[in-house]
Amino acid sequence: MKYLKIPCIIFFSLALIWACTSEQEPLPGTVDCSTTLNVTIANEVDANCGQSDGGFTINVAGGSGNYSFQLAGETSQTSSLFQNLVAGTYTVTVTDIDLGCNLLINAQVRNQDGVNALASVTPSDCNNPDGTIQITASDGVAPYEYKLDDGAFQADANFGSLAPGEYTVTVRDASGCEVEVRSEIASTVTFGEIRTLVQANCATSGCHDGSQSPDFRVDANITGRAARIRARTSARTMPPSGNGSLSNEQIADIVCWVNDGAQGN
Image (cartoon, rainbow, N blue to C red):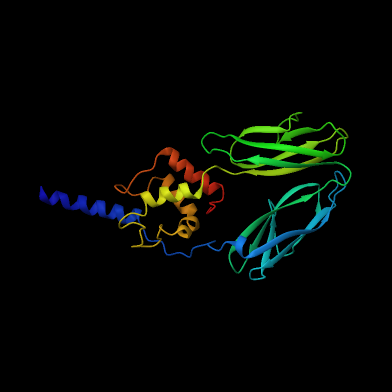
Protein backbone atom coordinates (compact mmCIF):
# COMPACT_ATOMS: atom_id res chain seq x y z
CA MET A 1 0.00 0.00 0.00
CA LYS A 2 2.92 2.36 0.45
CA TYR A 3 3.49 2.43 -3.31
CA LEU A 4 -0.02 3.77 -3.86
CA LYS A 5 0.84 7.01 -2.06
CA ILE A 6 3.50 8.01 -4.58
CA PRO A 7 1.16 8.77 -7.54
CA CYS A 8 -1.10 10.77 -5.21
CA ILE A 9 1.81 12.91 -4.06
CA ILE A 10 2.98 13.40 -7.63
CA PHE A 11 -0.54 14.32 -8.76
CA PHE A 12 -0.94 16.86 -5.96
CA SER A 13 2.44 18.40 -6.75
CA LEU A 14 1.68 18.67 -10.44
CA ALA A 15 -1.70 20.25 -9.69
CA LEU A 16 -0.07 22.81 -7.41
CA ILE A 17 2.62 23.62 -9.98
CA TRP A 18 0.03 23.98 -12.75
CA ALA A 19 -2.17 26.25 -10.65
CA CYS A 20 0.82 28.43 -9.72
CA THR A 21 2.38 28.50 -13.20
CA SER A 22 5.05 31.15 -13.63
CA GLU A 23 4.07 33.76 -16.20
CA GLN A 24 6.96 35.71 -17.71
CA GLU A 25 5.11 37.67 -20.40
CA PRO A 26 5.60 41.47 -20.43
CA LEU A 27 3.38 43.35 -18.03
CA PRO A 28 1.07 45.74 -19.92
CA GLY A 29 -0.26 49.09 -18.83
CA THR A 30 1.79 49.64 -15.67
CA VAL A 31 2.45 53.34 -16.41
CA ASP A 32 -0.12 55.71 -14.96
CA CYS A 33 -0.90 58.23 -17.70
CA SER A 34 -2.69 60.50 -15.24
CA THR A 35 0.71 61.45 -13.80
CA THR A 36 2.51 61.84 -17.15
CA LEU A 37 -0.07 63.43 -19.47
CA ASN A 38 -1.98 66.70 -19.29
CA VAL A 39 -5.05 66.40 -21.52
CA THR A 40 -7.54 69.19 -22.23
CA ILE A 41 -10.39 69.95 -24.65
CA ALA A 42 -10.04 72.90 -27.05
CA ASN A 43 -11.60 74.46 -30.16
CA GLU A 44 -15.11 73.28 -29.33
CA VAL A 45 -17.61 73.81 -32.15
CA ASP A 46 -21.34 73.68 -31.37
CA ALA A 47 -23.60 71.65 -33.65
CA ASN A 48 -26.85 72.69 -35.23
CA CYS A 49 -29.73 70.54 -34.00
CA GLY A 50 -29.79 67.23 -35.84
CA GLN A 51 -26.70 68.10 -37.89
CA SER A 52 -23.24 66.48 -37.83
CA ASP A 53 -21.31 69.73 -37.85
CA GLY A 54 -19.85 69.95 -34.33
CA GLY A 55 -16.41 69.05 -33.11
CA PHE A 56 -13.45 69.61 -30.79
CA THR A 57 -9.69 69.14 -30.49
CA ILE A 58 -7.72 67.23 -27.85
CA ASN A 59 -4.61 68.99 -26.55
CA VAL A 60 -1.95 66.79 -24.94
CA ALA A 61 1.23 67.75 -23.10
CA GLY A 62 3.81 65.46 -21.51
CA GLY A 63 4.63 61.83 -22.09
CA SER A 64 6.52 60.63 -25.14
CA GLY A 65 4.75 62.86 -27.67
CA ASN A 66 3.60 59.85 -29.69
CA TYR A 67 -0.16 59.70 -29.15
CA SER A 68 -3.26 58.10 -30.60
CA PHE A 69 -6.88 59.15 -30.05
CA GLN A 70 -10.01 57.03 -30.09
CA LEU A 71 -13.61 58.11 -29.84
CA ALA A 72 -15.70 55.48 -28.02
CA GLY A 73 -17.00 52.98 -30.56
CA GLU A 74 -14.78 54.28 -33.37
CA THR A 75 -11.35 53.37 -34.76
CA SER A 76 -8.17 54.86 -33.35
CA GLN A 77 -6.54 57.82 -35.11
CA THR A 78 -3.36 59.86 -34.82
CA SER A 79 -5.16 63.17 -35.37
CA SER A 80 -6.37 64.98 -32.26
CA LEU A 81 -9.18 66.66 -34.23
CA PHE A 82 -12.72 65.29 -34.08
CA GLN A 83 -15.34 66.79 -36.36
CA ASN A 84 -18.64 66.03 -38.12
CA LEU A 85 -20.22 65.24 -34.75
CA VAL A 86 -23.82 65.66 -33.62
CA ALA A 87 -24.56 67.33 -30.29
CA GLY A 88 -23.86 65.10 -27.31
CA THR A 89 -21.24 63.90 -24.86
CA TYR A 90 -18.23 61.92 -26.01
CA THR A 91 -15.47 59.89 -24.36
CA VAL A 92 -12.02 59.94 -25.95
CA THR A 93 -9.22 57.51 -25.08
CA VAL A 94 -5.81 59.18 -25.35
CA THR A 95 -2.96 56.66 -25.62
CA ASP A 96 0.74 57.33 -25.21
CA ILE A 97 1.95 54.71 -27.67
CA ASP A 98 5.54 54.61 -26.46
CA LEU A 99 4.70 54.51 -22.75
CA GLY A 100 1.89 52.01 -23.26
CA CYS A 101 -0.72 53.79 -21.14
CA ASN A 102 -3.96 55.61 -21.76
CA LEU A 103 -6.22 58.24 -20.27
CA LEU A 104 -9.93 58.93 -20.74
CA ILE A 105 -11.37 62.40 -21.17
CA ASN A 106 -14.97 63.49 -21.70
CA ALA A 107 -15.98 66.15 -24.20
CA GLN A 108 -19.28 67.84 -24.98
CA VAL A 109 -20.60 69.09 -28.30
CA ARG A 110 -23.44 71.46 -27.50
CA ASN A 111 -26.60 72.09 -29.49
CA GLN A 112 -26.32 75.59 -30.88
CA ASP A 113 -30.03 76.42 -30.63
CA GLY A 114 -31.55 73.34 -29.00
CA VAL A 115 -31.59 71.31 -25.82
CA ASN A 116 -28.37 70.50 -23.95
CA ALA A 117 -27.92 68.08 -21.09
CA LEU A 118 -25.46 66.74 -18.53
CA ALA A 119 -25.55 63.55 -16.46
CA SER A 120 -24.76 62.83 -12.83
CA VAL A 121 -24.14 59.16 -11.98
CA THR A 122 -23.66 57.03 -8.88
CA PRO A 123 -21.79 53.68 -8.88
CA SER A 124 -23.50 50.32 -8.68
CA ASP A 125 -23.11 47.18 -6.60
CA CYS A 126 -22.09 44.30 -8.87
CA ASN A 127 -24.40 41.74 -7.30
CA ASN A 128 -27.36 44.05 -6.55
CA PRO A 129 -27.55 46.75 -9.26
CA ASP A 130 -28.31 50.11 -7.66
CA GLY A 131 -26.57 52.63 -9.90
CA THR A 132 -28.35 55.82 -10.92
CA ILE A 133 -28.27 58.42 -13.69
CA GLN A 134 -29.76 61.87 -13.18
CA ILE A 135 -30.06 64.19 -16.18
CA THR A 136 -30.06 67.97 -16.03
CA ALA A 137 -31.44 69.52 -19.23
CA SER A 138 -31.24 73.16 -20.32
CA ASP A 139 -31.83 75.42 -23.31
CA GLY A 140 -34.14 74.46 -26.13
CA VAL A 141 -37.89 74.38 -25.54
CA ALA A 142 -39.27 72.88 -22.33
CA PRO A 143 -40.72 70.46 -21.31
CA TYR A 144 -38.15 67.72 -21.87
CA GLU A 145 -38.45 63.96 -22.28
CA TYR A 146 -35.81 61.34 -21.47
CA LYS A 147 -35.07 57.89 -22.89
CA LEU A 148 -32.53 55.34 -21.60
CA ASP A 149 -30.86 53.39 -24.43
CA ASP A 150 -33.65 51.81 -26.53
CA GLY A 151 -36.40 52.36 -23.96
CA ALA A 152 -39.43 54.62 -24.24
CA PHE A 153 -39.38 58.36 -23.57
CA GLN A 154 -40.51 59.46 -20.11
CA ALA A 155 -40.97 62.71 -18.22
CA ASP A 156 -38.74 61.62 -15.32
CA ALA A 157 -35.07 62.62 -15.67
CA ASN A 158 -33.91 59.91 -13.25
CA PHE A 159 -32.98 56.28 -13.95
CA GLY A 160 -32.22 53.77 -11.22
CA SER A 161 -31.38 50.13 -10.41
CA LEU A 162 -28.67 50.17 -13.06
CA ALA A 163 -25.80 47.68 -13.26
CA PRO A 164 -22.22 48.77 -13.98
CA GLY A 165 -21.81 49.59 -17.66
CA GLU A 166 -22.26 52.18 -20.37
CA TYR A 167 -25.58 53.91 -21.03
CA THR A 168 -26.95 56.51 -23.42
CA VAL A 169 -29.75 58.85 -22.42
CA THR A 170 -31.54 60.72 -25.21
CA VAL A 171 -33.09 64.04 -24.20
CA ARG A 172 -35.79 65.55 -26.43
CA ASP A 173 -37.29 69.01 -26.08
CA ALA A 174 -40.76 70.19 -27.08
CA SER A 175 -39.54 71.26 -30.52
CA GLY A 176 -38.28 67.75 -31.27
CA CYS A 177 -34.60 68.62 -30.95
CA GLU A 178 -32.57 65.82 -29.34
CA VAL A 179 -29.21 65.40 -27.64
CA GLU A 180 -27.51 62.21 -26.44
CA VAL A 181 -25.72 61.97 -23.10
CA ARG A 182 -23.36 59.01 -22.72
CA SER A 183 -22.59 57.87 -19.21
CA GLU A 184 -20.64 55.06 -17.58
CA ILE A 185 -21.65 53.62 -14.24
CA ALA A 186 -18.69 52.23 -12.36
CA SER A 187 -18.86 49.41 -9.84
CA THR A 188 -18.47 49.85 -6.12
CA VAL A 189 -15.74 47.17 -6.02
CA THR A 190 -12.40 48.74 -5.12
CA PHE A 191 -8.90 47.61 -5.96
CA GLY A 192 -8.20 47.36 -2.24
CA GLU A 193 -10.85 44.64 -1.94
CA ILE A 194 -9.47 42.74 -4.94
CA ARG A 195 -5.88 43.04 -3.73
CA THR A 196 -6.87 41.59 -0.36
CA LEU A 197 -8.60 38.63 -2.03
CA VAL A 198 -5.71 37.89 -4.38
CA GLN A 199 -2.95 38.28 -1.83
CA ALA A 200 -4.74 36.27 0.87
CA ASN A 201 -5.50 33.35 -1.45
CA CYS A 202 -2.84 33.45 -4.16
CA ALA A 203 0.25 35.24 -2.81
CA THR A 204 0.94 32.35 -0.46
CA SER A 205 4.00 30.24 0.21
CA GLY A 206 5.34 28.80 -3.04
CA CYS A 207 2.62 30.44 -5.14
CA HIS A 208 2.92 34.06 -6.40
CA ASP A 209 4.57 35.16 -3.15
CA GLY A 210 7.80 36.30 -4.80
CA SER A 211 9.21 32.82 -5.23
CA GLN A 212 7.95 32.80 -8.84
CA SER A 213 6.53 35.24 -11.36
CA PRO A 214 4.19 37.03 -11.17
CA ASP A 215 4.60 38.28 -7.62
CA PHE A 216 1.09 39.21 -6.52
CA ARG A 217 2.43 41.15 -3.55
CA VAL A 218 3.09 43.87 -6.15
CA ASP A 219 -0.01 45.88 -7.12
CA ALA A 220 1.05 46.36 -10.76
CA ASN A 221 1.27 42.59 -11.24
CA ILE A 222 -2.37 42.27 -10.19
CA THR A 223 -3.73 45.08 -12.37
CA GLY A 224 -1.52 44.11 -15.30
CA ARG A 225 -2.78 40.53 -15.30
CA ALA A 226 -6.38 41.28 -14.40
CA ALA A 227 -7.88 39.42 -17.38
CA ARG A 228 -5.82 36.33 -16.56
CA ILE A 229 -6.89 36.47 -12.92
CA ARG A 230 -10.53 36.78 -13.98
CA ALA A 231 -10.27 33.77 -16.30
CA ARG A 232 -8.53 31.51 -13.78
CA THR A 233 -10.64 32.42 -10.76
CA SER A 234 -13.81 31.98 -12.83
CA ALA A 235 -12.58 28.54 -13.90
CA ARG A 236 -11.68 27.81 -10.25
CA THR A 237 -8.09 26.93 -11.15
CA MET A 238 -6.93 29.84 -9.01
CA PRO A 239 -6.24 29.71 -6.12
CA PRO A 240 -4.94 26.13 -6.17
CA SER A 241 -6.43 23.49 -3.93
CA GLY A 242 -5.16 23.87 -0.39
CA ASN A 243 -4.15 27.52 -0.83
CA GLY A 244 -7.50 29.08 -0.09
CA SER A 245 -10.88 29.38 -1.76
CA LEU A 246 -13.12 32.07 -3.20
CA SER A 247 -16.88 32.28 -2.83
CA ASN A 248 -19.14 32.82 -5.81
CA GLU A 249 -19.69 36.41 -4.68
CA GLN A 250 -15.93 37.04 -4.43
CA ILE A 251 -15.40 35.65 -7.93
CA ALA A 252 -18.24 37.86 -9.18
CA ASP A 253 -16.51 40.86 -7.59
CA ILE A 254 -13.27 40.03 -9.44
CA VAL A 255 -15.17 39.71 -12.73
CA CYS A 256 -16.94 43.01 -12.10
CA TRP A 257 -13.68 44.79 -11.22
CA VAL A 258 -12.00 43.56 -14.41
CA ASN A 259 -15.00 44.39 -16.59
CA ASP A 260 -14.98 47.85 -15.02
CA GLY A 261 -11.46 48.45 -16.32
CA ALA A 262 -9.37 46.87 -13.53
CA GLN A 263 -8.57 50.21 -11.99
CA GLY A 264 -5.71 50.24 -9.50
CA ASN A 265 -7.22 52.74 -7.08
